[in-house]
Image (cartoon, rainbow, N blue to C red; front, side, top):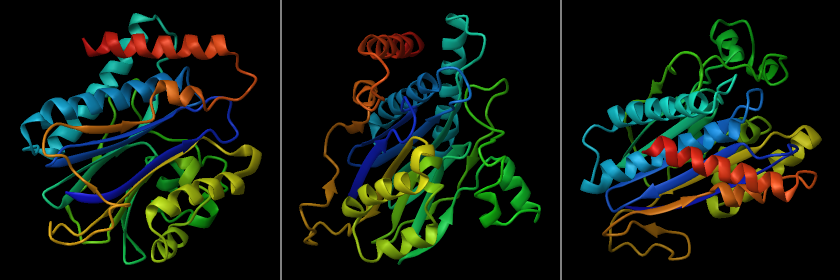
Length: 305
């Protein structure tokens, strides 16, 4: 597989970054995952951390033999496992409220992509500068739009725009929306992002700029622009962008922008707990940061056993 990929996360106007994201790949299959811990519930960053680590670990276990036989079954099973791990953590720690997170996960293998999501973290596919397909949020405003009671423009400022009805860590197991297989063309771009990123930006704007810039240049700019547009009210914002490159091994792709999947083993890139701790506002003490890191790491170890 040959592709260009970039990921990053900004804290925005919050005290703590509750977003988590990672990608992992071998020579046959690639995984991308983003989770947005829900700030209205206790310790959303723990839910997001457990979700991303649970799914990434499952992927590396089941992908060790090469391509996944049933990718959609894997997506649903891994997300449900992440939900159960979050609930188990809350039970073990006798939390009055279970941490919660959104999730969006994408698999790429055999020249095709498929994805699954719960909540309002999004996946876009862009082709030739146009939005080809996208996920639909599990949110109150999306329900109103589906019923013809709200326009997309009005949804951006609706008082219920942050209310979602589906997530990991809730009282009920998450309802998961699965995509159909998407055959990738050379130049297709897949973009996963949290609502802090996609909220201030339109898909038309992103698509038009993809015609002029590659994702290594564009996604960092869009993260800054989205944060600037939201101002002091900016949420955490995160994105993973992938552009599908020419798969012919004889094709001379620019070495500076193209990743070729390794022949053996996995390559993983995650914005992990320690990195995320550097994205914390100055009024949070070092001791609080270290305690949060240790708590999350201990939780992951327990639920992984």
